[in-house]
Amino acid sequence: MPRRHLRRYQAPEWWPISTKEAVWAVRPSPGPHSIETSLPLAILIRDVLKYAKTLREARYVIGKGLIRVDGEVRRNYKYPVGLMDVVEIIPTGEVYRMVPHPTKFLWPIPISQEEARYKLCRIENKTVVKGGQIQLNLHDGRNMQLPYDEGSKYSTLDTVLIDLTENKIVDAVKLEVGVLGLIVRGNNVGYYGKITEIIQTYRKRRSSVTIRTDDGKDIRTIIDYLFAVGKDKPLITITQPKEAIQTQ
Image (cartoon, rainbow, N blue to C red; front, side, top):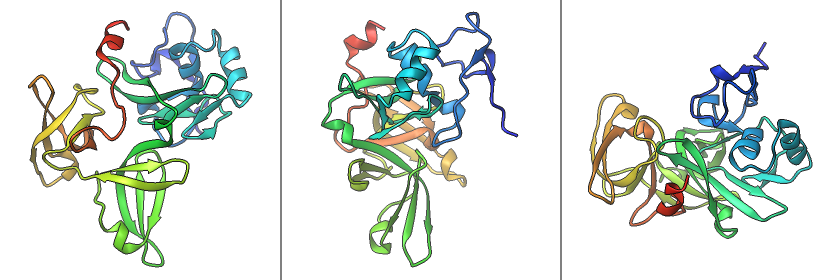
């Protein structure tokens, strides 16, 4: 049987909860993101966005259907919120996107209502299914079936821009030298810049990649930790203003 409880000291270190305040933490439900790369919706509402003071209040807010994730109302307070997910507070109209953060691993940044309809997803796998169509398996658990000619244009680890309201691909970025890459895991999480080098290995996801940040710093990581976000500029907002980061 799956474990239903999670002790606070066993939770990921980046979760914004204290191990001294209580014994138990909310365990994320099985869903589109793993426990190591997601935050339970209740903790996001209570401990990050501060819309509630207690878990009971957070459960009430979520249970009333006041929170949308990727355009869908979520009433499960354990729902795992992860990379690039769009979270909307319905009564206030505030919208946030979950993006990598250099010290907090994953953190919400405010975005506009117009941008809330778009989401970047990385292609984790690609298969041919019955009928000759190509199915793209995306990082957030989403599966998209496309005609063979259209689906063959995309490769594993490429990024697609999804219109959440129509559930269709509106743009794409190939993971290659010259595009902008965002580091989403590892010691350098949160940094982004232009990809200057890719050294292929026999295991594609362990290939070495170097990005150059705006201040000229070269950072190396593995390709599995990289997320292509645009060509000349990011397709969506992926970072907070510097002054906002300094005040946190």
